Amino acid sequence: MQIETERLTLREFVPHDWQAMAHYWADPRYARFYPERDNAGAFVRVLVDRFVAAQGDDPRLAWQLAIVERASGTMIGNCGIRINDTAVREANIGYELNPAFWGLGYATEAAASILRFGFQDLQ
Image (tube, rainbow, N blue to C red; front, side, top):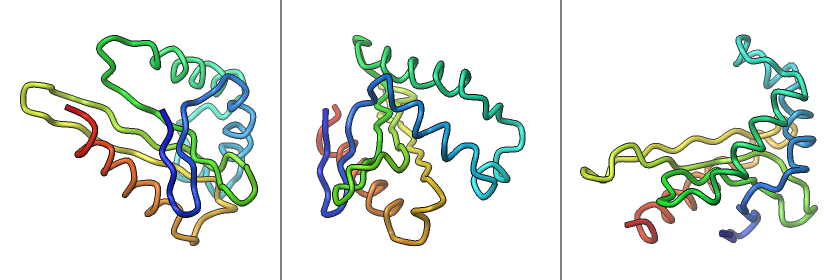
């Protein structure tokens, strides 16, 4: 599964994505919002492994996607949509970005694309 926007690619996680994620989780600008998180690389690796494993769920109720800046090919964050209740068609979205890419409109672009996916492609 992959979503292309003007400046971003949202794609399925792959195992080595944990390294980029651990890098921005360790950034003090990011970490100050999540003081309870364990920023150790081992924890991030387990989390990314969960994202990868969930890609095979049937039925699939969660899509956690890596956000890649198209111009550089750099993984700069992630976003996702999770179905809470299929009976009432309720879901939530979330996203996070490497602080080096804050203020560029990337979070807005990623969130808009995952919302479109949720309303247009999910049943």
